[in-house]
Amino acid sequence: MLIEVKVPLLSESVAEATLLSWHKKQGEYVQRDENLIDIETDKVILELPSPGAGVITKIIKNDGATVASNEVIATIDTNAKPAAAASPATGAKPQAVKRNEPVLMPAAKKLVAESKLDAAEISGSGRGGRITKADVLSHQETLRQPAAKISEPSPVNVSVMPGDRPEQRVPMTRLRARIAERLVQSQHAAAILTTFNEVNMQPVIELRNRYKEKFEKEHGIKLGFMSFFVKAAVAALKKFPIVNASIDGNDIVYHGYFDIGIAVSSSRGLVVPIIRNADQLSLAEIEKQIADFSNRAQEGKLSIEELTGGTFSISNGGVFGSMLSTPIINPPQSAILGIHLTKERPVVENSQIVIRPMNYLALSYDHRIIDGREAVLSLVAIKEGLEDPARLLLEI
Image (cartoon, rainbow, N blue to C red; front, side, top):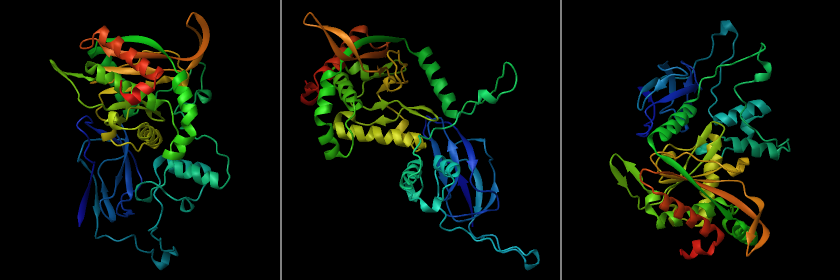
């Protein structure tokens, strides 16, 4: 039976995708659920598993082609058998089909090749036993090999370019092009204004230091700072619902739920996975989701659904050392919180100069629907929640 290989259904916000690289050639045998090709959307890289076992009779769309949802890109004959042995006259040996060959994620496959490892010795923790980059790194530690940080190489190596004034033209990835498009759209469509404040992180730091060991033992996850920022943001959004709203034509849409986008940097670019119903989650649940998003972003394993929607976003430039910035709104949202590097600074308390770990907060908002009063007061509410974490637990 001849079956069609189709592009999976993309979300409404994703019109098209790009075929990255076929893992099989025309005429080769493929197992059911074996990864045929990696497909890049403007948000994630998807694996396309084979819908059945058989021989690839035709590849309709080649590497680099632009495709849409449900578009046919190849056909598979499920009645065909693996290539037969060569005739005795050639002296060639039959080619065995590797039925149990491990399936590697793209980043894992690259790392295995670079490190000259045997993939058969690595246990896969991904879907269907797929081997992830984290699995490879864990295997390296088991073998007591140098656990150097693996990073994606830059596509441009300036040092080897010829000439006195060298240049190299590199096409944008679909994700980078989409990021550029959305940022320009945000700047052109919204009346963006940013308000600032500073927050004394001493209470949160003391609370974290006091309970972090018990917290990790109880919940199996480290207690970070981002969960406190999420809780403080949700508390402020409840007090000022306009900051959690969005514009749809001439209407203002007020959201009775709190889906918080967390900006995560990956080797492919910036992605913003969504913590759904953040107001209903504990600190531990928020920390687990953030850790999971961060790990899967590096592997390109975030789903389109996890990157779609959101009513408010948080961007943490402090992890890179940023002291101050004006974050750009992620449309159709109307506001975004930027947090920065916490640094000890002299401040005045009760007419005395003291040293405190201070963090500058920046709230960018769409002035078309959010007035300065609501923006400033919502940022003050975030500040108050962080400087007195008990307020977040008592919801006051």
